[in-house]
Image (cartoon, rainbow, N blue to C red):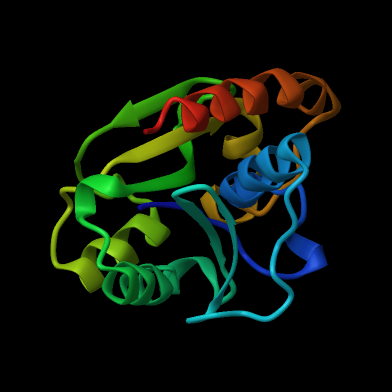
Length: 172
């Protein structure tokens, strides 16, 4: 069994913001595969299943993502190596995708929460680059992560999300 977690904030006001890149990636995957999210949250997250993969979108705020991740891992007895966290990273250039088997939070509050709850940073993660230095300087970090993609960035999203879908499909 694999657990694939997209990080983001619940609520329509956060749709298509940089911080919701994890939600966006899983929503794209679900749409491509014709899958539907369960309507009732389980362990503080909405989920869907495809074969031996469970996908979740935590429904608390970003910096509390670790609570439902831990609950799903414990309930389904999923080992850490079968976990994949998908999140944004404003330190990576827009569109760049970085996959690592372990590592620090790198300033990402969702990863910090997961590391705290699991008491380890040894789990796989896929970071989606949302960086735009000019806009980030103008807005500041907090407003930047909650900002929407520029029209030019939006035009590139389908290609980026397709790449992530391919990476998810390769997980066995």
